[in-house]
Image (cartoon, rainbow, N blue to C red; front, top):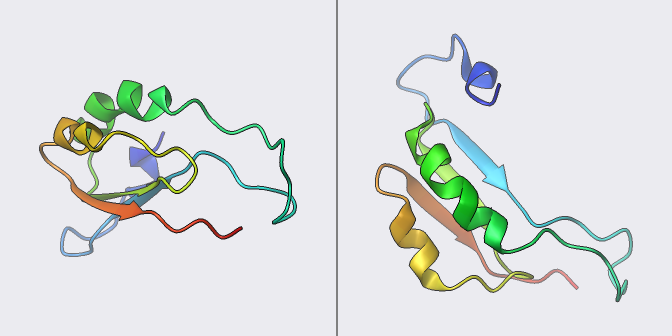
Amino acid sequence: MLERCFHGVPKEVCKIVHICCGYLNFLDEKDHKKADPDNYHQLANEMDQLNFDQISIEDAHCANHLKLLELFEKKTIIFGTIAIA
């Protein structure tokens, strides 16, 4: 279904997908449940095969090991590391 979002988009348009660990309701929220950081690693191979160009990975809260980036062979990675809180 993710690829379907880009159906009919011309090839010359850069197609980007953002994945994140979740957003807080309030900037000072302490016990916000975030996605398991291992989810990025589980999705990497599948996402690398899909028909889009770049993946924006929000990492400020997860602090993934940089080995994660090596799992993406075909995609350009945009790596977000700024915590808004």
